[in-house]
Amino acid sequence: MKKIFTAISFFIFLLPFLLQAQESVAEPLTKINVHNLGPQRLSNLPAVSVPADNPQSSLKIALGKKLYFDTRLSNDNTISCATCHDPANGWSDEGPTSLGIKQQRGGRRAPPVSNAAYFPLQFWDGRAPSLEEQAKGPIENPVEMGNTHTEMLKTVDNIPGYVDEFETVFGTRVVTVDLVAKAIAAFERTVITTDSPFDRFVRGERDVLTEQEKQGLEIFNGKGHCTACHWGGHFSDGRFHNIGAMPAPGQPADSGRFVITEVPSDMGAFKTPTVRDAALRAPYLHNGLEKTLEDVVELYNLGGRTDDPNLDPLIVPLGLSDAEKKALVAFMKRALTSLNPEVADVKPVPSSEFPR
Image (tube, rainbow, N blue to C red; front, side, top):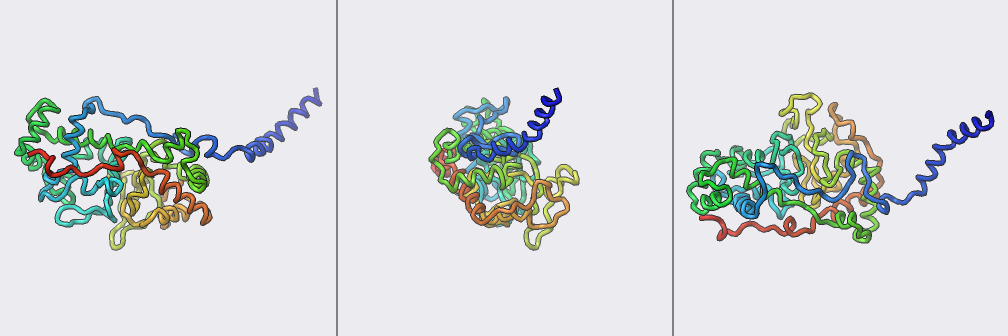
């Protein structure tokens, strides 16, 4: 009995070393499957959730697309949703922050519309609980579209073609803010990046990524600590983090999520953006201060650029080598750029197709 007990004790002592040896000869992550640090592994995007009170239809989507590109919803007929959320700029804008009516510059840059349907909360600070509620905000924002809902509805009511389309889609000729928002949100729920080299890789096309991009994926999953926040098919946790970003020159520090919640830990925290199509929408962060993906990687590699006392504990120095940083950027630049035409090739609605 004593010999058996000794043998068992010795095996238990060796077990960690045996497991470590087994891990050292394991296949690279890219040859097994995508990996995770967050609660959901990197993957293809799931189906979009659609609210019960706003079901999708082709006619509603078409109406929403026209409203999305129509500058007549703004106070001076110069700004549409697409002005700041431009398909040609990764469904964002040229930055660093967004321009509204009368060339007024806002304090934050436009978050991308692509894949926004997967976020439980909208805007950088999460103040809107749905795409429908988000669509209402810029119309009345004095720096953005500079209108009022009342005046916007008068404009739409005076366009017979729109009134006819609202009746066809919603069964009423009484156009309301809620119906305008529902139509726009229905269109936005079609802007989903379902196809990229990464998506094809996950579906089994192992040669679609270069060796450097595969290394970048491994770093994204592991040493780069990226999937602590950028996880799942959406490459975002939808949560809010203070990442140690610098404030805009000459501007006070942005309080971020704290303005909404008044929770001290939310001071300077902003929603995690998706990394999908990131290469198409430089500059980066809520204030556009990081000009390139290389700059963003360096921000995280340093563990933030400020000594903010409210820095998220997930933000730590990474110790990436130059080669590792290049691989990580290479993965984000090409492997996560969408190829599906309903996202990559969307063009503005021609003026001849707007309702009159």
